[in-house]
Image 1 (cartoon, one colour):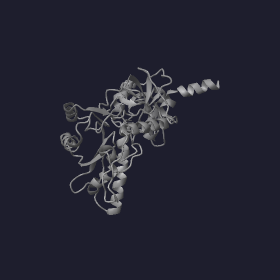
Image 2 (cartoon, helix red, strand yellow):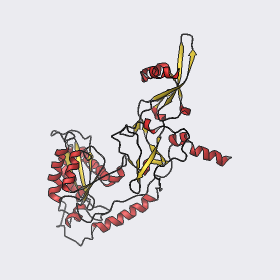
Image 3 (cartoon, rainbow, N blue to C red):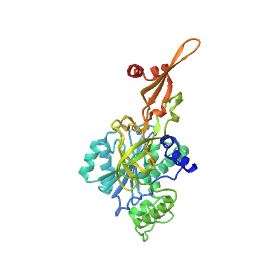
Image 4 (cartoon, rainbow, N blue to C red):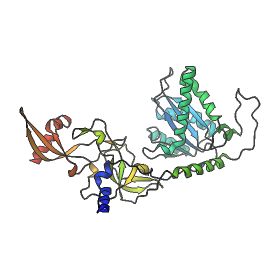
Length: 382
């Protein structure tokens, strides 16, 4: 009997949607292939939200070579259009290193714009996007972002200068610093030796340098071995029911309780497998801005599909993977009398939930929060 109870609880739809996941993160590490030459495969990202300078710069465009780890930090403005970024890209990257073979980035509005797509096609570059809400795809550039932010904080604290003025020196300091995975500095991997600085007591001499690709492959092997100890494999089949991790919107109320207590997951169906650790899900038609490919770490298995499945076409997921629950049906009605007046209560079924999860809500709350709902459904209920 104990085993039957444990099995029933583990397969309970409500439990699977609301309970936190305490297992190891799903999906084994999938290192990107080591490029065969310098500046053939690059990564891009933005550091935004910086104090606006006198010239109007408020962001930094970070571009990194995957092989040598050399980087360029370009001050930009958030008001720039895709055409301006394309001109900067040709002037600062293509003019120095040639046209790259591939560009890895997140799914920012710049990198999925039509103009950038046309430019990529004209230059013959492959654009690789990470899956939704999985920044580890561009983990290298995310780490450099952290280093650059720390350097700019230190400069602002020590010299009280504007971050824009420190950016060229920060770029040089990063490129001329030792990298453990390369076993040399990025400049050393790019030019064959470190660049001279005022601190050099002697001229930096050239030395026999083994290919940075060999060092990177050894580093990737170590990183994968270490990372996979804290991960677990997770595989789905086509048309499997899976749970997608979401978060409720702020300000959403259910049964007098804020949306913080809303379910953590919604149940969807997998359409296809896109690589070793990514799946394409059958999303409802409403969130056009949400990409339908998700990393396996955002998913978990549905152990049992409940008999009364929630209609996925009614689930409205926002681009930031939040959702708002709406009342969709009145199941029952009752009235509670007080000394002064009678209060009407309605048993309401919410979107993304079955009838068993219906809650009793006051008429006043429903009229205030969802005007028009009662008038549209009361007649049908009666």
